[in-house]
Length: 197
Image 1 (cartoon, one colour):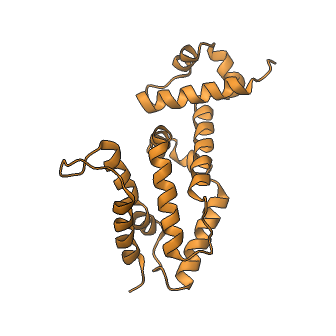
Image 2: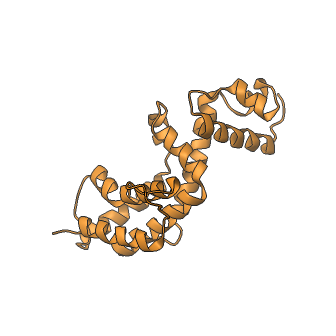
Image 3: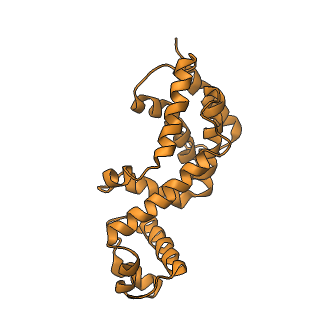
């Protein structure tokens, strides 16, 4: 059996991520990847079982990295307002600075690989978020809603602002640049919507 080279493994993953972001999952193949990296397809199979294993490996690594960035400076014991503010700052920074990685993660979430990828999400992240939300409900800072409703209200507005920023324009066609001022204005409305009546 041939020795594994960690640098080569990382090069394979980086090239694969770039190809998937540029051309989509359907156009991605091990043969095209091998040609782009300048190796044989058999070399890729030294590092990954198959195409899905490679894609899911990249997904797990990038998902873990995104979650690590999301939780910087965050504590599940924080007030809901402060904890959500820190997450919005961290999430927006990551989305804007790591645009290709976010596109890749979204492509997987909207693909047939989604169910297999979902089980790879770090359980510590889920536990911290669950603890944070439950604390906020107990303290009367957050209304009790389903996970789907919470996620849609708490984070979808932020991701829409980031999308406007990526396009460089708003719905009206005016120039749009993401700013802390716009983010905090939106967050204020989100916090009102999630606060118990």
